[in-house]
Each structure stands twice: as C-alpha cells, then as structure tokens.
Length: 188
Image (cartoon, rainbow, N blue to C red):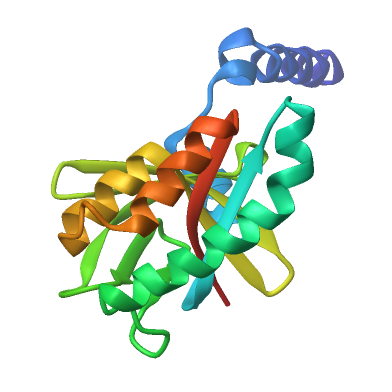
C-alpha cells in the first residue's frame, strides 16, 4: 500500500512539472541570465581606433565604385572626427555585463543602460530619456559601432557645428548612391 502511495505521489509530481504554465513561464531571473550571457560577448573597456563605414548597393556601377568611395569617405570621416576633437586616447566605450555603459566621446562622460541582441547585431544605448540604436559588429579584438548615415549626420552636425562641411556633403552623397549606408567608429 505504501508503495502505491509513493507511485501516485511520483506521478502527481510529474504532472505538475509538465504543466503548461511551468514549461512556458519565463522568470525575470532567466531573462536576466540570457541578457548577461549576451553582454559578456561585448563587455569591457573599448578604446577608439578610427572611423568605419559599411555600404551596400544593388547597382553594378555603385558596387564597382564602393571600395574607392568607402576609402575616401573613411579618410574624410577621420578628418571630421579630428576637427570635432575626437581623440584616440580619450574616446572610449565601457560596456558592463550588468547592461550599463559609460561613453566618453566629446565632452563629459555619458552613463546609461544598453540592450544587446547579438543575433541582430543590435545595440541600443539609453540615457536621459534618449534611445540611440546602432549596429554592433564584433571582429576579433575590435567592435564596430555603426549608425544609419542620416542619424549619424544629424549627430555630427549637432556635435560639431560644421553643417556646411564638404565632409558631411560627401557622406550625404554616399547615402544617396548606396541602398544601405552605415558610418561610425571602430573600438579595440
């Protein structure tokens, strides 16, 4: 009789383990664990290493000209960064496993939170009610933080105050001739 009771209790325990609510419920701790594991992929202090650019196009002519255009625009972009006093020794991005970041680009440090989705190469920075979406590509010991060119141009104009610059005109020209243009910074 006691054996039968143990068997019934055991069967009852299995039914609660396989109950749909227990299988499909995700706890806050489980969500945080997944976020922390993703954040470990990019956690650390990253130092500015230079400008970067990505461009795609379906046009044959644009595909042929792309390497030359990218090289020229990258050089112009690095000159623009120097004009706005973006310095390798001072510019850094610290990403912590807990989802917080500290960024020093120009002026005071910016502190906030971030979300990283590695499958989409998507990084969202949040501070003072501002959300900034970027593409984060990891390449060995470097990360490339890329923004849509239109958003990046707006940021450059705001940060630098040189809206009529030839550099900005060339970056704008690039966005008109390629389907998907992203510009930004490489960190190592």
